[in-house]
Length: 556
Image (cartoon, rainbow, N blue to C red):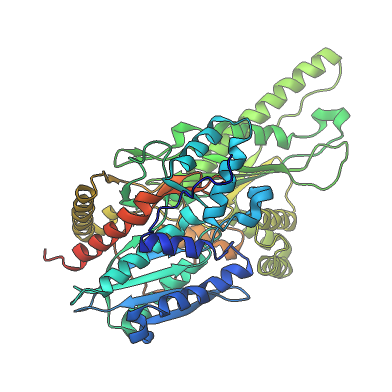
């Protein structure tokens, strides 16, 4: 590629474009010190604007979690009355490791885009790489870690906030919020949710709705990415901890194969479209396995005692009780199928050998809550104390699957149980399904105002913006404006081995309708992550501004 290839960044940039690139240049990988430093940089940027130089008391940083501490950034533009709309997005990103030799450019959008064009132009390409090269050469797409997910969404929100502040008499109040940790456990948004009632009281605000600013993907012409999402998928992470009976590999039928049981559970779950939800005419994704492994260290010619599987199950309507009951029944059927197959094979083996006999095999399925109760009954207070200590300081660190696996194994040992059996529960944080339908007439009014604004902007920019029911990516939207049901929280708490992965929502939370309106692009979290600039930098800030005004001016 010629070294003098022109930049793909349009000149001059819109305000949202400038902000997008500037914030992308601030690395903020989740759990890094850069993530902790981002809030101070953003506070400084917002503090330079004319409005916040005049009203510094309306620019706040609230501690969230971590050491060094991560902070939520809040910027409030006041207008008339108490009505307030919240714009929210996250500033943490996934790792830059998958950029390989280009990692040093991962947060430099212009330089990275040129480098990717050069790299792609000089190699044999697969179809995904062909599409990436075509996009980057078009001048409509810009690459960068976090530029799509989701600093261009934050930038659009800031640009809309600044425009709102320039109105002679803003028709209400607009609160912009930037949070850490969305890519991990949404601790930023959850801490903001918990603090928001006090913030609303301090500034005398009536929060009537919110716009999440997260990005979506579109492999086509953008018609699917230019969207307002009226809800977001729910996420469950059911696990199956399988206990077999280990045996020497030369005497297979003396034991019970944990792998065979695990394989039947995998066959019943993996990509099973019959397990997809349908709601509002949209189908949820099929469940997939995130981790499957035997639980032992080192090599030995013995079958494993334990096998672990953890699944990602996205839903549009199922409750925690629905998921746990359905998963438990599926696991029970899979275990019976596996044990019957092993017994059948044993009979045929011993018939051919002319000696020996097959064991009659029966198994059981226990919930983690049932297992924990048995462990305390068996081991008494000493066992309960050991499990509590492990829960509070698991050696698995930040990996929720490793942490949960370790706690379940310890609880099974304390209970003194042997296989064949399977323990079921939830391995990590539950992300609730949310939708405007749960807000009743308030939600329907909010939807009308949002659709009025988006269609107005679509006509102005001669494009299309469609309504979609469910944002398919797991996001902070699950905790934004959502007040969890107490009975669901209790079931999740008893079924999730590690208490750190239970959302402990306090009483008195605010509840209000929320939609997602954000940028679109392709390959987020991947090396070719890129944002569609015309929409993200020009159309999106206008949509957010008009949506805010329509919502706050609502006279219905």
